[in-house]
Amino acid sequence: MDEYFNQMNKIIKEKMTSSRIRFMLQDVLDLRKNSWVPRRGDQGPKTIDQIHKEAELEEHQEQIKVYQQLLSKKERSHTPGGGPNSQPQDDGCGNTVPISKDRPIDTNRLYKIIKSGGMDLNNLVLAPGGKAGCKGVWRSWEKGCSGGTEAKPASADQESGRPATSTLNHFSALQQTSSLLSSSDTDHRDRDHFDRSGHVDGQEENPITKRSFSRESQERGGRSEESAPTPPPSLPKPSLSEEEMEKKSKAIIDEYLHITDLKEALQCVAELNSASMLYVFVRQGLESTLERSTTVREHLGLLLHQLVKVGTLPIEQYYKGLHEILEVTEDMAIDIPYMWLYLAELITPMLHEGGIPMGQLFREISKPLVPLGKAGVLLAQILQLLCKGMTPKKVGDLWIEAGLNWNDFLPEDKDVNKFVTEQKVEFTKGEELGPKEVVKKQLLSGEELSKQLDRLLQDKADNKHIMDWVEANLDEEQAASNHFVRSLMASVCGIAIICEHPYKAIAEQTMVRAELLQKYLNDEEKELQALYALQAMMVHMEEPANLLCMFFDTLYDEDIIKEEAFYKWETSKDPAEQTGRGVVLKSVTAFFTWLREPEEESDKE
Image (cartoon, rainbow, N blue to C red; front, side):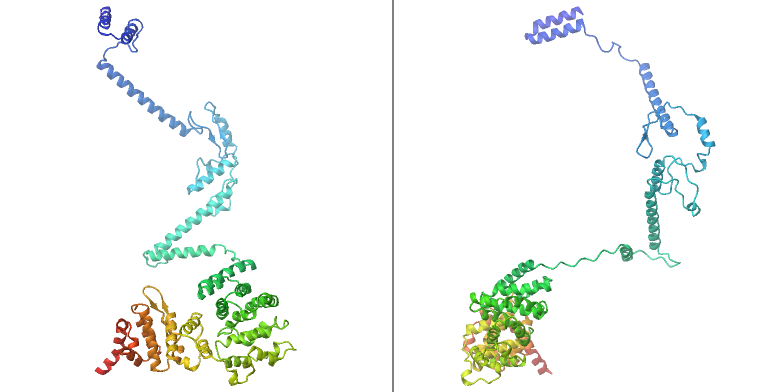
């Protein structure tokens, strides 16, 4: 060994020049020489016999561990408190009861308990019982919380075949509820199984299909709905306050006057669902349009007329809203000089067909104005506006038929004849107009005539009202002119066109005007002029496909234009009507092919 260390020192001195490495190796040598003790002794290699003995020893130790585990499990199963390492037990009421492993057991005490009758060995239950698992759980909780009270004797429940509850405790109600739920679920499952099996009183088995299963589910659902308590009836929707009604009314009126969609406005008013508050809508409409344009006032009057016509606006509500305006007219007239004319423009549409009869309307609106001496002024303005839509004679006839008299509307000191002359309503007296009193009808230009006809059609005026307007505003020569016939046809068909891609024609819009067109297209020449008007319209619209053919079908089916007029238009050589004629003729080829088919069939026969 000394020779080994000497050689190492020699190598260190000769080969290693680094002082750091030298000192490290020197420390290792000093440690090994002085105090290095091996952790394990120098035992040398093991023999075969030692290896076999160690293996046998390890196997023996494993067998001992397994045997000890089996013993500990067996002791815990037979000992109430468990094994030596058992945890404290719960008594069922939230209290832990520690079990001591060194606690002695006195068998004499057990014998005394048995002899004293404190324990019935026949009814002793060592574990939770019951057919259903949930019942056993309730019974174990019940027993734990009973505090060790003794069992009750058998009752009528046992005689009926039901097990009696041993004790009453905090969980008795839960046990009863659980028993009821369990028994009803069991009966329901048995009944479902019985129903699905198909064996009823010896009947043949029915296969379960998707339809039968859904029907059975519906029946069960129906039974459950019948057993459910009836919900309380829903409370009626609270009516709107006057302030809320004013806001909603203003929004509806503003939108209607902006887009003039009468159908949408009627629907919006109906959706308010406040018939008892519609007088606010009437009042709001009159106030907001009284100082606006004539067109706006006429549109609002038409809306109120349609609301009364369809039954959405009760007449009493209309009168109530109108009276609130009429009662303050004396003050309003100071700031609005033409107030009576404006009111007349708002009220006059109500006299159209389907509105309010003249007698009833005039008597009602005069009630707040007669004390003020202004009733006659308003009625005269309404009568003058009516004369623009019909002849003065017809207006006078309506006045007389309603049994109206100016003495009922004028102050006692007012001269009736003078008033009638000043207001130019002599027709109300039933006297024939003299030559000087005949109202001269001004000749309307083509543009003005078309504009007036378009307005009447857009406002959905009935055919009779349009005829009265023509009679009141056009003389016989102008009403029979080709210019009027063309304007009328263009207006009627223009309203019926839906401006989509492609263009479409609503046949119903033309059909409802059949009576109006038949009145003025009363000969073949006027029918030909009407077809020329349609031709010019198609050229202006750049010949939309099939549109003219749609109009031709409706005009022929409704007997507005006769077959001879169609053939005459087809073969016309009028130089003034040749613009775009070739394309227009081609678009109605199918119509004329169909028109000739009956003739060809009759010729063959």
